[in-house]
Image (cartoon, one colour):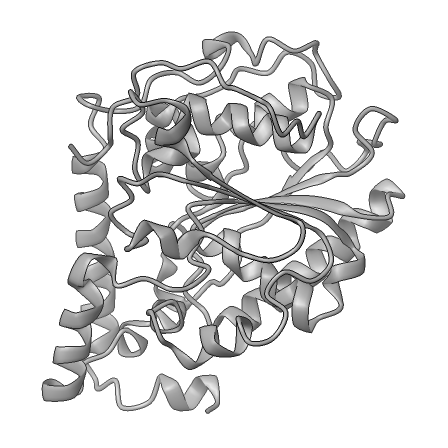
Length: 335
């Protein structure tokens, strides 16, 4: 079915309804993401990651509050350290890193911690806002059909490789951003261009979203009201049991690069949380609470979780199987 066909039958008032729902979603996220119960500062606090200054100098490493602030003030911007097109990979860090945000997110909101951490450590860091629909209003992306977003990612990879002279890239993706690159790897010849994919709470096998999918299916069946009509085509594709995921996970699940999945058992969006994990050659699944029992982070908080960020830095760096992160108390965004 073509994109235009999926969007059909929206009615005269549907664009206005979509916009209203986007605004409501924003309010809910910002209300939930208050300073009370948020994630603590990641490794190194606001002054950096503790590593030597890299391609971009000693950039400030943000917190969840920094991400939420960017959503209010500059959602179309890029986080510190991202998209320096004069950056050249070093022998210590030969693979440029592409950061891939999730559904209803953007680069500015998602990577205020990890982007400067990587840049300070000497990595070349890149990213883009993908999957735009007319209702994004400059804030929310990752809504388009995932195949379209994967094509955007393909273009981004080619541009990064051309600019840096590297032969492969590493990727770190959150939620849809940890799963969507697998489509690029499997179906768009990305397996030869990706060295490692690190997924933070990825939707690899879909989600029930703690019953949200069941509610959406009820409205679709009884009232003809679906995620597609709201402009979120990727939402339908990420439902557990979707035809998109069946195709993605048929046959070899993990071709090409190494795959690392980092997930929290308190994930309230990817449910059950184990649906994030992959099996097959060159895979590593990490449950944060198996490392640190005082880590209560969940889906929104994982991109600013100091434990998860240590795991990311290890995977992209030494990639030690015996790595043990420094544990701390991490409170959930949704408490």
